[in-house]
Image 1 (tube, chains in turn cyan, orange):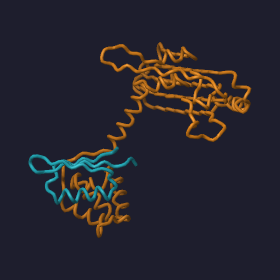
Image 2 (cartoon, helix red, strand yellow):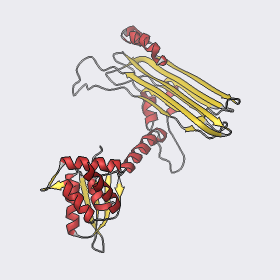
Image 3 (cartoon, one colour):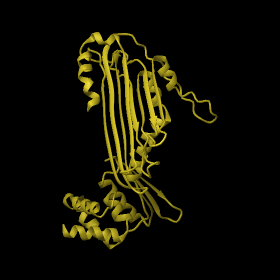
Image 4 (cartoon, rainbow over the protein chains, first blue to last red):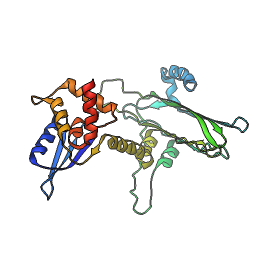
Length: 49
Length: 296
């Protein structure tokens, strides 16, 4: 499955925006992890085209 | 294709159940290598047909075992050809992968198909033509023509009655694969290296378990995933905001602008999704797409 990985997203506002965009774009799964420095990593999985 | 010129006759036979008390397994290979030092032209031709026609046993999804394998380097000087042809138990034995190497996973061999029940005609065939024509200037390739033509066909019988939970349809196993590896370097180093497998019944299932066969599909899948997957650091700026405003309006995607953005990403050789463009690609790439969208 194709994935988009965006590490080091600065804050929760940016995180919310990215997740919403990926959901609108058809992501089947979105995994968010928080780094020790407070930033977030986002991994979105998309269906095969 | 000329390989299947004989198919018409076989198909006629398939319609006749009398043909099911024979199993016919045929392979035919033509190889031609021609190097003309005067014109500095090299021609390599490879043609192969594989055909199995015999009984299938639709109640159990069974088929007699047969296997054919050919691998050649088709080297201009001293070409090598390795070939294997086997049927029945020999086909099953030769396709087993009972490795005893330490640390290597042992693959359990498939059980032989039980060849009982109602016989129906089964046909499986492939035809392959490969050609490589290379012109040299000195020892350097100056022109290359490569042609590839392949056909694969299987006609596998199902039971005559409708399938039920107690007696579902079962599809007999057949397998055909080809891997061509072409090298164009100089007159002595240029070669086509075709490797072909062809198998039916338990032999086909044995082959399907082998890493050489599975690995090919695994590599294909990994390459496809790698091509479709993207990783990049977070990057959001004014250009991101402009793209976002074009793409999402009142909380919904603007389909017209989305199409324009996708088209402009393609024009600028930017792969992936719009969300990735907005949040992770460079400002230069975003500006290129914005500029393109404004012109469209």
